[in-house]
Length: 234
Image 1: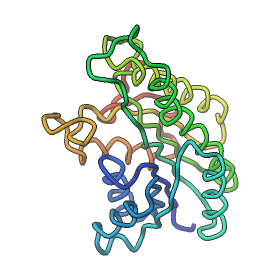
Image 2: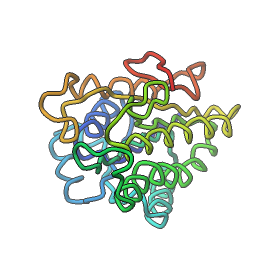
Image 3: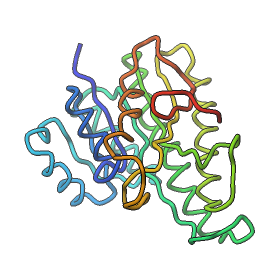
């Protein structure tokens, strides 16, 4: 069997960067997708010799053209795509914002990246997974998108993650029986640029569940929502 190939969007920093590092350490060939190509290359350089297992590509996840070009490049140069981690995301809500304060442009830009992005990239790469009868898709969601525990604040972000979870469920059902598994995960409150320095979870801990879902055995879960490798309510 040829080595597995994984794509990680937003892989140049934070949780995405750590997911790239851990997948490469497990022997996967990883495509680090970054909106800024130079930052992607800088990220690969920081990984030292592990960077030999990493390809860098420029990708705006909201661009159908770039997503199709990425799929064509992967098929041409690597021959397969086995794993997709839809990690790229934004939190654009002004501090202290509430539902009735939503600025339409903020909502639109949030959904473009956090919902449309995963849909566009997944649609481009699933055909490559079908070719080999294997796929693992991990959607980076958030507990802030849980309907079971919905609260105040960051309404655009919350709504986008709820929508991403709906995409996870519908896609998992659509791909049932294909050995392409689709799951969402919440990384927790993570010490990244988004989470801030006082967050309780390290990037290494946050990436663990994503890597676990990205490398599930054939009898692993499908269509679930996880934190710390444990299922959580939608």
